[in-house]
Length: 117
Image (tube, rainbow, N blue to C red; front, top):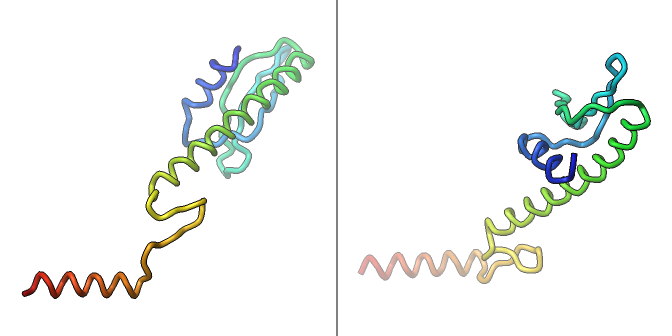
């Protein structure tokens, strides 16, 4: 399995935040799963089989590196989306307002009185 295949499988479940890669022994082979250890449901996503414990350990190391990369990209994407939601209200990652609340009410009152005459 290459990175793109792994990423595609993880991304099939966008609502689940997988946090670890684990192995489970079944008879003579090992099953590798991505798991969400932070959730009470403890979701598991089957990734692949491994022939022996050594092979399973190698796969876990590789898949864990890929999972860290995928989670970092998701965090970065969520940050971009949050910032895009209110671009007029953020500067240098801090909220800012061009006018005070009092000035805003005064402008609003002025506009209301102008439209009434």
